[in-house]
Length: 109
Length: 114
Image (cartoon, rainbow over the protein chains, first blue to last red):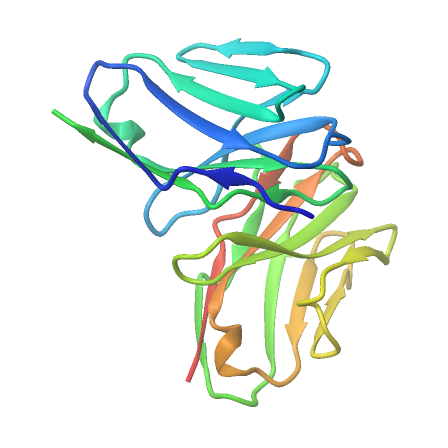
């Protein structure tokens, strides 16, 4: 079945690293995505990774992909208060995205 | 930077009324989508559209829903007879390629059905 799982909450201190985890189900997904949603706002594409890669780095963001375990993670280095938001991972086994439940990241000073 | 734009940002309607939500996808994109997010829940796929045809739709996208690309720039979602449970944020998205690469979302249209 189609089910993308994420933990619901993560709380970190400003300046620390955040790691948001995701497990997906469909091994045919060729691309996997991370989106950020701030309160009342749309879905901002943060980054995505092609399934034949195991890591992608983009400034403060690092995506790790374990295809064998169908596990995806997003690491945010030097987390800032402006990073507080809901983070969604998504798989794309067909042309549609299947989103996870979202992880609410709270950054405290 | 090119972006997907949606109107209206918020619409309040009475149950049973028709609603049209509008989207202007990124200009060189060929694949268009609608998703919805009921308050506090997951983002759910509704429909994908390519070459003036629906390419995929979910179980949610029943006969009450329709999509159209009436001209070269707009992409619309129509709900014929709204129900209370249609209250949600509706997101339009577009992509240049099929099943690959970046998929960009608009800011959403909040629909409230009373």
